[in-house]
Length: 322
Ligand SMILES: Cc1cc2nc3c(=O)[nH]c(=O)nc-3n(C[C@H](O)[C@H](O)[C@H](O)COP(=O)(O)OP(=O)(O)OC[C@H]3O[C@@H](n4cnc5c(N)ncnc54)[C@H](O)[C@@H]3O)c2cc1C
Image 1: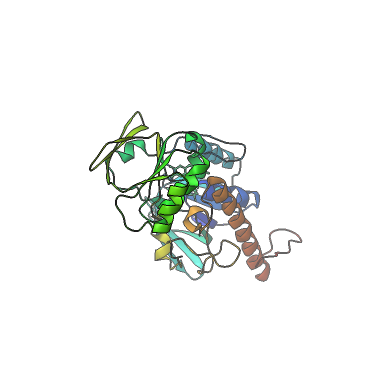
Image 2: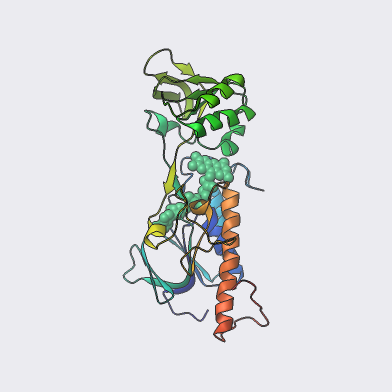
């Protein structure tokens, strides 16, 4: 590689499925890449990644370990365990300030794969059960608790929809609304018709043992025995970097992509994975696919730029996506 130290063709912020998958594809395109990851994945509390082709139910840490190890085969890829503190775009280059570095590192293209954070409902005892028997995603964890007594925590229409969705995994589903008036009457009727009980009493505490939910306690009345609880609640960007760089966001707070590829409204800046999952599926394999897609577009855009400037690296490469 003919780039000076501290200068990369691509810097990837975030080393989850999206970022590592992008690094792999860029490595195979002979690009000089740096992946910087702070080690706070969205699924920190989870014990398995369900539905990842050929790795079904693998431990999340093991999935990342294999991906990182595979990258060691490519000398053009560097990986650092650190936090990116600040990024500035100056004269078509990104200046990336990494914690512990005296000088900013530079790159021609930047990929943000920084993920999101789920906002846990504020209920006593929830943290200890989260990822074991308290979940947000039925596609990820419904199978693990199929045919068991389930509760759904949801204070609006989304919560009612989630309760209805859970009937695919169990016919014993209860919706707990915390007394919210935002669950529409038509949804209450629909749930009743489908055999889902709606409880408006406020949950005060979840009780379990070794990560296994056993019982929901309410402000008033009898406790309720349940084996798992699914919740519907908002999420937010894990990192402030997309906002500080001037990215546009959807109403749900996801980074907007420009057109079909993973480009953003900022030239040279791309986004992949959950951080940009606008209304889409938030599975790990989809995040990985977005990373691969972003890598393809980044490679093509670098090749096109080099071609325009008479710096073509490969012979006869005709970039299709400038
Ligand atoms: C409890 C739970 C269970 C789940 N179960 C499943 C499942 O069974 N199957 C499935 O397919 N999906 C599952 N998911 C979803 C899965 O976790 C996500 O789809 C996946 O992690 C998204 O990958 P990502 O690369 O976009 O983001 P992440 O995996 O969240 O990675 C983002 C990375 O960016 C890093 N980062 C952020 N900001 C910075 C910064 N400033 N500097 C450096 N690094 C930074 C973070 O440290 C993090 O490592 C689950 C999620 C949760 C919460």
